[in-house]
Image 1 (cartoon, rainbow, N blue to C red):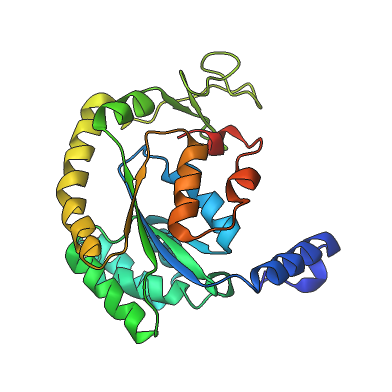
Image 2 (cartoon, rainbow, N blue to C red):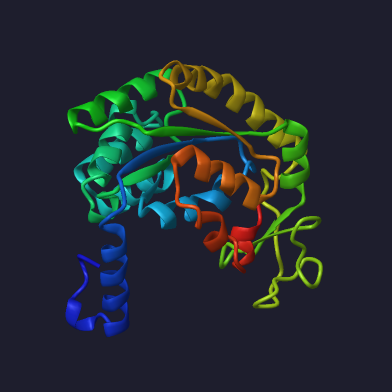
Length: 262
């Protein structure tokens, strides 16, 4: 809202934002990292944690694309690297995260998803936070068997225009292959198949096991039983973060399918 002309913002939107800020004013600061393989349920739980704790959700892939599109100094540097076929450096990604943390939406802390993926990245993140006089509060490890993930992911169908997701077993559309709202056809992502998933999981385990060990030595890891129902996982998160007792009650009322799915 900071970049909008307030004269063009509705009274309802202004009032809602004012009420949100008043509610968030008494919330303690929290800085949380989510670690888990594709299909583990992070996408379901992130909005719950964000709403309950008034945190900003930082997905590094989205942030990088946004910085490039906005042509920020760091975004320009990232685009130059990508245009050359080079990897974006860890320092650059940490810089983009640091930049994002200056936003008012991040004043109570953040949920970081997709970073760090290596111990080196974790160390650079710690260094950046230390310079800000901050530190991580918790690392949520979404632990789940690969066999369960295969069932979850290979049955997933997407409405590309809206991002709504369905599952042939857990949350099927009213008509097979058809979006409930628009009546348009659903698609399966190219990487939502067993062969690609196996490769992605192997890479995930190889990369992230050392990261989890790094944070375990700091006493920051809370391991979740991510194979359980979403409301059960929410309660585990509530316990790990010291949330108020109404988190699970308020967060799993009727939601769009995209939030009820894994």
